[in-house]
Image (cartoon, rainbow, N blue to C red; front, side, top):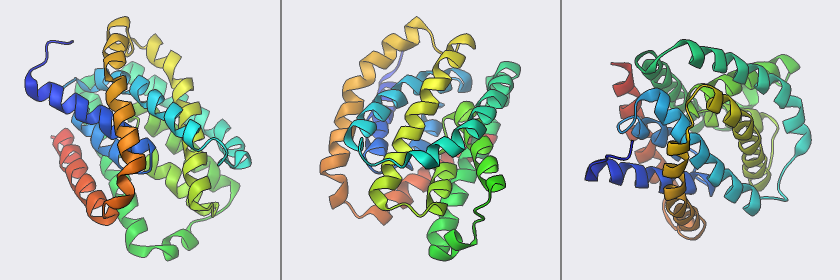
Length: 247
């Protein structure tokens, strides 16, 4: 697993730093990370290797935003998310890496599409979203499924939080606690599927410094970077990666 070339090491270290960045205010970075990790690892292995790294980032995020969470919005969503997670578990149990790659590619492109729609229509997009229990159930199941299959539920969760009309800080903080919870739930399931091993956890431990550095960079430097330009670049690269997974 660790017999990497120089390019592979550059990719995985960049991905680790990008996870830190994503947890400090640039969630779209995770979409790029999901696609880039599959340039180094097979699809199934990449999903399992990525999860503990995301958990490290989640711990940083909930520490930083520990008081900025609206629990009632999480509690109403969690039962539906768990249904989606377990559906994803059985799908992962049944398919191999070759079958998983195009599925993750479609999820990545769908998340990018959601972001583009939000950016293009702004408040009109938010106003047209339903606010019923059925909508919450749909979002929860889709979010649970996509995060279980490919660690890529950021766009779906963003829609849910937008519907709730949360201020920016509560938006980020509530999302951080959501992903910490769901990633903890996923951990034993990934273990059971053999996607997380002792060897992969050793690799994850090597990546912790890069994740922390990325998070610190995000907190200090990210506000100084033109966010629209940066996000556009990230999404274009992620789209290229997602399309590559389809073929």
